[in-house]
Length: 198
Image (tube, rainbow, N blue to C red):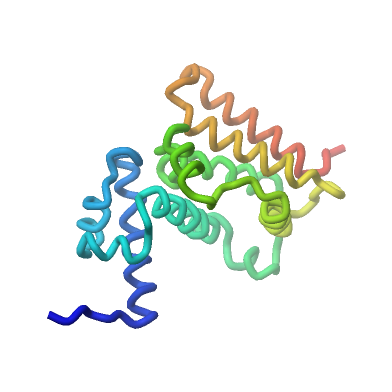
């Protein structure tokens, strides 16, 4: 039987279908128990198709995190902000950072530090890159009003990573003050971003 050739559009749709299948699986099983078989079964795609797109599960997870993050922003930031017609204040920025660690919205609380280490060690997706991370952080700050003059973009990026690491380490932290820990980290990030109110 001849091998089927997919058009560029079909390939893109297959990739999106598999990425869409990922978040519910990660929420239910975590990264360790989300197998390639579970991903392709949930997507309704043959297992072999997966390997046309990703070398292994870690490369898939790296793309899933990036894909999920890109989907999250428009859900939290309305069209007027995305188009530059209005800007967000401190309260809306706080809601965004809370969403980053909300298990219903974000992938990060369903991962562990071990998961993160596997992705970092097996892919180059999250290798610290000063230029790239400064550009991403600066781009996000463009949606905000009353931003400090010359904010430390790399410090904000690092603090955001610490927020994510905290969510990934929840089981190792004191549950009684977990939410207070998250709130304190977010307030620290907001203080780095916004001008202090008089």
